[in-house]
Structures are given as structure tokens and as C-alpha cells.
Length: 280
Image 1: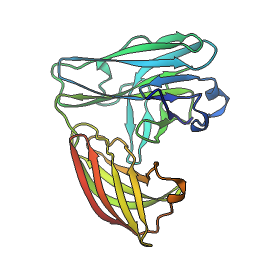
Image 2: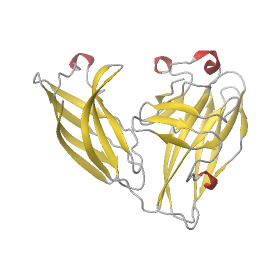
Image 3: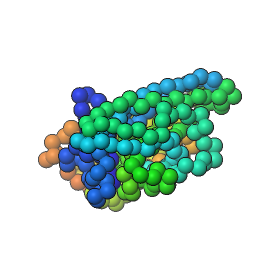
Image 4: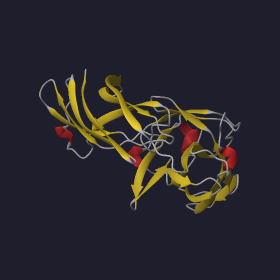
């Protein structure tokens, strides 16, 4: 089941049903899971000893009652952006004991909505760093690990069961990201060859790169490329895809003839990287 984003009334809404061609339903089981969430992820900050509170908006997009189960979950990500949502057991160094959720089961009336509250109680002796967890909304059991794929900054594809994972990041203290450029490469993916930047984060919290770069290929053609804002977790190397500028007309987007000379700036919270490299 692929989760994508719709922009509604100026806000992002991650929806399983009702996004038209942006949604890819996964079988009959997923088709009956009609729930949306907003926002699709949280990026919060708190000091040791404080309580961080926020609210998730849940929407039943079906014309029948919806019964849901909710829990917190640990998750992990590999260098290609693949995400695993873990089962109910705590993983090593989990901060989920800090998390308080409003309730574990709830019902929404047809086309109804509800604000769902959660809190993060940061201990007095918490180290500067980042607490990461997911709020998992499901029908049926929510106790099995799920292998998923990070498709964009906010979108997670889950091929198993009817579930949504809303990722929560809580920066503790004055922790910041620190991204550095590791290298560039070409990978063959479903849409052909794509340029990749590998970034490392030596900071204490995740960084989310963004920006535009200009590439000149072997045929002398200029390409405007956008950085996919994939989260780069603390201590990790992550491959970040460069894709054609989505604001360009389709006829102006042409295949890249490698090698590609790439220049521009990768920006992130409290920093930027200047890129001047050739991708073979």
C-alpha cells in the first residue's frame, strides 16, 4: 500500500483513499481502510525535564463508522531510505517510554474527524540528541513489524496491511544536524538512470536537505534538478535522489547524458553545502 500526499486547503494530508491518481490501493483489505492524517510528520523540540505536546488530526474518509487501533512504534531507516516499522517490543535506546498517547482504540463516525493528543515527557537527565518514534494507526492487529519504503519527505509506502505511520522527531536541547557531502553516483531505478548524492550527518538530530542544483551533461544540455528532501538521520550516510524540477513543462525534461557536471547548494536547518562535482 503506497501512501502519498494530497494538498488540501493549503495543508498536507496523507490519505489512503480519495487522492485519485496519486493513490495506489493495495488489494481489497487496504481499500476498506479509509483514514487520513494531518500533518504527515512532526518535527518538535524540547528541553530535558520538559513535556512536549501536540495533536494529530484523524479523518474518516468513508461513509461508514471506522474503528482504529493506535500505538507508538520504533522505526529504523537504511541508507536507501527504506523504513522498517518495528513491533511493540522496545528496540535498543528506544525513547518510547517517554511517550504518552491519548488512547489505544477509537471510533470515528462516517466522514468524521478527531484531534488525537500525544505527549513526550523528556527526562531531566536526557542527553542532547533526538527522540524518534512513530504513531501507528491501523485496523486489525498493529503488533507485527512492517517493512516499508520512504518515497519522499513525508510519504511512506507500506505493502502490508492497512496502516499509517506518522513519524515524530523530537530534538532534545540544542541539538542540530551537520550534513557533509560524501560523494555522487548514478543509479538505475524504475524510471531509468538517476543522479544520487550521498550525504553524511555528523550532528545529533536528523537533517532534511533541500534546494535546486544545475547540471550540464555530456551533450551540453542543462538540467534543473531538485533535491528529494529525504531525512538523513544522525550518524548515517543516506543516498539522496536528484529529480527534474517539477515546475518545468514536461517537454523541457529530457534524459541526462552522463557524465553530468553538477553545481549548486544543498541547504538544511542551520547550514548549507556547496556542491561542484562530476557524476560519471
